[in-house]
Image 1 (cartoon, rainbow, N blue to C red):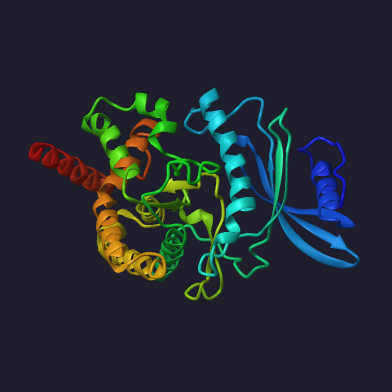
Image 2 (image 1 turned 60 degrees about the vertical axis):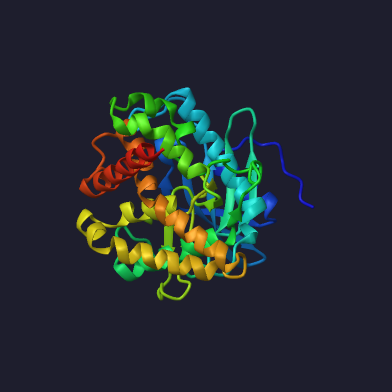
Amino acid sequence: MAVISPYSVGTEVDVSNFLITRLQATKAIKIETIQSLWSGYGEIARYKLITDGKEEQVIVKNIQPPSQVEHPYQWNNEHSHQRKMHSYHVEATWYKNWAHLCSVETPLPNYLASKFDEATGQSIMVLSDLNVQGFPHRREQLSLDECKAVISWLAHFHGQFITKDPQSNWCDDLWPMGCYWHLATRTDEFEAMPDNELKHQAAAIDTLLNQCQFQTLVHGDAKVANFCFSDDFKNRGVAAVDFQYVGAGVGVKDLIYLLGSCLSVDECETHYDILTEFYFQQLISAVKTKLTKDDTLSLVTQWRQLLVFAWADFERFLQGWAPKHHKRNRFSETMTNQALAELKSNNNLD
């Protein structure tokens, strides 16, 4: 077994040394920086490993907390920093302890190695390269067929981890409640909201989503940028990355976030019914060996009813976090108003 040398985490030389030591390579060469991490917390890079004349490409997520955070919306306090640091720990835990449970319907990178420096918060996580695995394409917007391919991935992911009446601690090593906009982790943004009906009903909406009888693991950041595509994307041709906010939740949280990230307002209004129906068809297929027919019917009924509340929940986050964000549009407003109307109607019936 290789022994890890006591070098610090962070620099390009440190990463190369770690790759050589942990993965028993002869040489490790940085090929390119793929992207910088949010708010300047490091980078994701592609490295080439050479071992006995054979070459292999890997992806390295190199986390280096900055001394001064530059957040595009100025949310750069200690609370934000601690949430972000915990998200990197959750992601490593996901790849080490949970990812192997995924089926062939939900491709994702393979975990290879990781290292964490408790004192500095610096860490390295090494994953297989999805380009090499056959998923070399990235998208900013999706065609209807491409959107369906991602929805199929999500539905099978949710089906894989579906849980009826879950125990309170069933995924505590991840986020007890997944998604990066979860109300309990966004108290600053909540305080920044205008004093309106959505703010007054935020806790009620949060409770409806969190206390649903059927829970699963949600990806937590299911935007189009976190999916990679094969040449033939229709046949298990989509893979997912970035599991920093994976945790418990209802699958429609991922669904509405995806639709808002890859479709225009007009496309949402045109294709919403088609795409949500496709999601539930895929979900039914994904849970057929896990739930009875009656439970499957209950699952679909409950999650379908929660769709508008998932939209309203994300709108609540945006109103406090970035009020002028482009995802705040007439479609999200329509969904939010529908959720508030349903809450009012239900309260009047009590």
